[in-house]
Image (cartoon, rainbow, N blue to C red; front, top):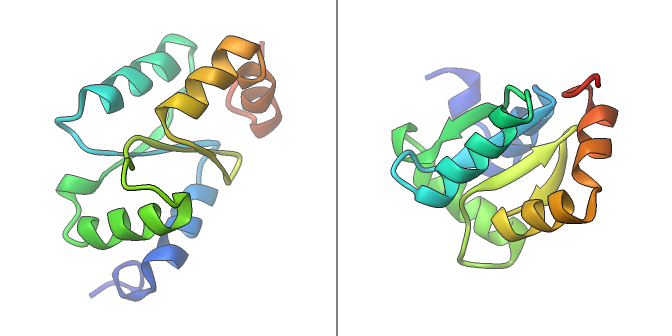
Length: 112
């Protein structure tokens, strides 16, 4: 077992979230996850995507994300610059109110 797989799920989430400018925890068959990935790709952002249904310990990560968010509606969960942004509704609210692009620029995910 690799060190990545042995650590606490919350520690693993924090580590994965800090490794890239934009990180999405997703389920490969979820339409909301697909929509959020398309949003970022359409903006020219290349997010790191962690598909929970393809991870041997994905259920543990999903439970840890539920605790972190305080909700049972988990995926997609987006981190920008290592900071938790939230689920689809929070990301879309940031996009609509104009705060998403500055967050992406600050994290180094967008240059324009």
